[in-house]
Image 1 (spheres, rainbow, N blue to C red):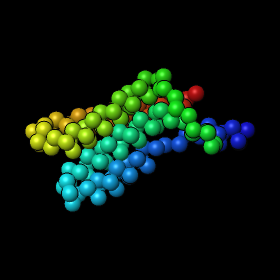
Image 2: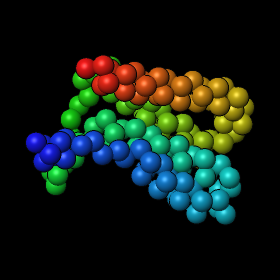
Image 3: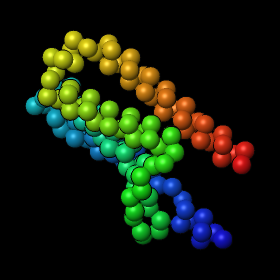
Image 4: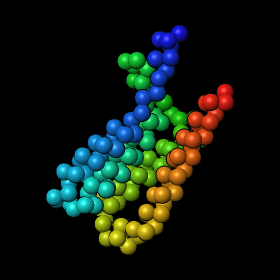
Length: 128
C-alpha cells in the first residue's frame, strides 16, 4: 500500500525551473542588465508550469501526459504566456518599457489565478 502511494507521489518542477531561470538570469545581468534576470526567471517559471502539467514521474518512469482537467490546461497556458513574456522582454525591451504596467498587472492576475486553481485542487482533495 505504501509503495503505491510512493509511486503516485507528485513531483513538482516549478521551483526547479524557476531557480534555474533565476540562475541563468543572474548570469545575464552583466550583458543584458536587470531585465535579463527577470526574463530568464519568467521563462524558467513558464517551463516549470508546463512540466508540472505535462510530465509525470512514477518511481523511475517518466511519462508525458496531456492535461485533461481545466486547471491543467489553464496552468499550461499560463506557462506558455510566461515563456512568451520572457522572450519578448529579452528581444524587445522597448516594448516592455512601454507596456510594463500592463504586464505587471497581468502577471499579478495570472499568479492569483494560479493560486486559486491550486487552492481549489487542495479543497477537493481534502473533501473526497
